Length: 561
Image 1: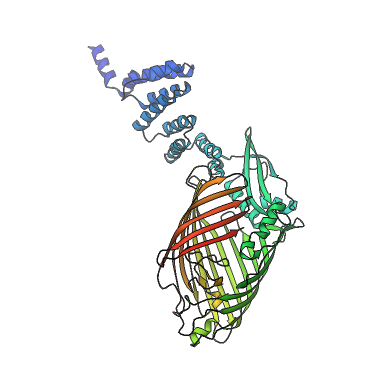
Image 2: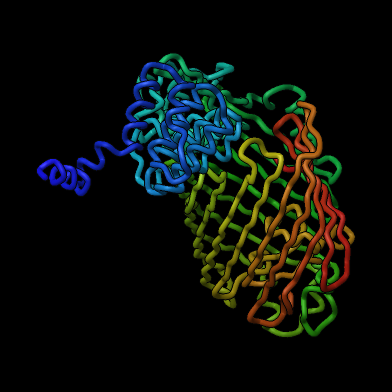
């Protein structure tokens, strides 16, 4: 009777029942075999019915993985995860199986899911960072490595050794051994190096050396006419097809002092521009630029100026301006700039103007303006290779003429950039939204325009900016909205040049409260463009665009630097 009572208590007790559970016995035996490196025996002991403990599935998966039976190991880890979805261990080991089979996308998904479940072990973050590192996604790798104080630098070097002053270079890079390289430090270094204006591109290479890393910053430095005589010649002569040359001098005296200029002898739109820039107080994060700009242009406003008189088909504008700018890099995520400009303009061939409202825009006058701009990275998702950047600019001006006076302008933009593939830039997508408005009366040369024109950056790619070589074909006004979308696909590359091709879609509108300018309705343009990158420094852009409302076609080519 006592024996029966004891047996009943044992069967009813959860603790004793657990001690004599078949799953617990098998788990203990399988764990012993696994600890003794008897992988096959451990896998056999852990094999059981479908409803067995997830710990047995987990141990079986580990044993099968040691035998490199990847598919069977995957099934075991998946079974364990389905039984206990809140345990991150199963996802981490599943990622290991996917990694061994070179299925990096699946491995990353499992590791990110494990982190969302609360996994805080260093192994998971190190594993995920390593995969991104192997894919060449350094920013994503640093995001996860930095959480575990990695990568610690052993050395930092620049290749090839730049001619730039050592003090400037050291301040621009900003990080050194034996510190931990952070994503913020590398982004800030890139921004400062770009601000110097002497590097066409930079790339960071990390090489593991035990528990530390050797960092090499690969840079392409412009000196004198360019990185090489061929590159310098291409830069200077890239605009010859449209009657323009770009004389330039870089890194004068090794002090990041640069002179850039533009000379255009097109009889319809002559222009001379020159700018000299230098770091302020030997600080690579601060750059001062002085510039001069003179234009003598003929405009045909037959289709874009809605005055009541004779069409302005031969209006001439002469404009001379000079200014001072300061650009400051705060860190890798945002910067600001400010500047002032003094300008003088005069107009000729205005016999078609009748009313005072019309004549206001074409008043000979001098002006002074001050502007402030901020550029900010709003959202960075390095795992998805996606960025969303923004900019905002405000300008106040005073035009010294009786019928003009004070004015204010605001502009803003959002720029989204996405590389959909985990590695490389085979596909690239970009979307951009821009808007601006001016309050107050302004002279004609301060109007916005939407269209393809070399002196205009608000591209509506189905609208030509010129007619017979004369500006004025694109719609103008004091308020605009513009949306651009494009996708590029690599179609050819041989080391000297890269060819990209893809479609685009633009839409926008521009208006003016006077009723004398504007697009009258929303414009929709589509087409395709080809980009040819030469020697990594000059990009030739060839565009075919179609105005979907007007039915007109545009063929346009230019060189960007």
